[in-house]
Image: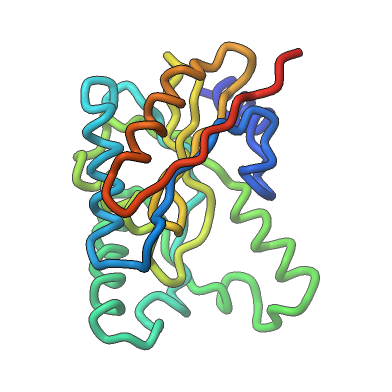
Length: 209
């Protein structure tokens, strides 16, 4: 497990995933947001890898800031977010705590910023097969839409040396892990995603050495 985490940290630029050395591309919405587009993107991901998903790993530092969750300002969105977070905490997939209580009351202080950065960097590995698929889908959906949810979230295939990540433009990106990443699997996934209604994909070829 620790080797996997090391490989991820060596391969992914956590400050900007698109700047990773073996960034292979992403797909996202190409139209205005329509309700349900996040579910469509996650359903597509699960459908694509339904025969392999049980062997994937979750690498996550995702956590909910209880000072913000449920306070976006739209009643329906706030109810949805609170329900998603409640389910994910109950499933053991994320933690929830208040930033003010944990990190102190001054968000402009260096100590506060360093504490938040440490929390983002506290990435744990979990087996997908240890959780119901609906809970995993909820995690991916929540990472796209929930106000007050922070941290990194990757779904890793060790067979293909690929890390997939959900993002807030309602799609997924892909990073190759090391020299043996299966670029073809990543590119096929993104090409198919680009055919989804209201989506487009950008495909990148990693540099050859």
